[in-house]
Length: 456
Image (cartoon, rainbow, N blue to C red; front, side, top):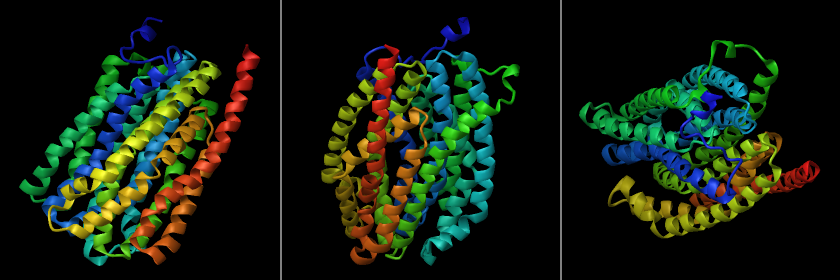
């Protein structure tokens, strides 16, 4: 047991005041998610300022393609580590070590499959999306490098999620901050000093991820002995492997399903021209950071739920979720107000002076989305709670609802209302996804309370 006791920053979420635990777990998680979003923010900002609006549109139009793959990665790696968190809550230390082996093996397999597929078909996907001819070459030069280096993103996500599964949300944030700082330093060098242009921005991102992975691996080696695997952990247990896949792949597919809707919407946006594409790209970067508080509370409640479910503390799950709803919705109102009144000033950072139409389009996007953030807040909490309990079917259905709503917006609303129709796509998707999640959550809550009474 000495090894299990010497684990530094790992945190047992099955004891203590739920609201306090979740809040303090969320803070570094929020910072980490913001840093993750800042990768795209920095790419867009530096490219837009130094290479111009067309280059901004070229990088911006790949956002949905990045989400298609990287969203799958984030969902799948989070899902794989759910089993790790449940083992930690149950104090099953052998299970934790075997889970590490399974998680890292699955992550490596995914990286090979996704990289080969992405590099092979990204040009065709850009053409299917009707990317404007003036920006398609720049878009391809960016996304092909990102897809080719996706292993760096997958592995840093997998290592970070394993650490978070043990209740440590601080160190992954430090690692992400370090990686981002390296990226910020490398991009101007690649773009300006070396004259590598758009490919330089993508290359700098990949290099920074490689360094981040090394830092993460060294930290685990020195500070997290629970994640140290032994020779006997390399075995085949089909039941446990399937449990990881059963939770992880649906979580990945949920993000991919949502991303397909984003790709269809991007196709409709591309038909509106480079100005609309650049406006949407810049506003989407601001929006991506704004929604991080809600997403972070969701990820925190998933870790909290997984550990307490493993420990069979069902009443604590209900109490924690209830308090998280209040905290997350409060944050959603605050960030909505900020974006509505100050978001346009941030958009100006991307394009500089003299681009009033882009700024006004961006402001419209932020106002429409901001008014619906409270719905997104509930969506994240209900989805991640169900996933923390090991459920995958209803969250997948919810992802399908998001897909349907985004496609509907792309086909009908953009055709009639133009850019406003594109702005309405996300709020429609959030409402559509929240309905099945809400129903499933309250049915699950009733079952958990019944289990709690039976245990008493």
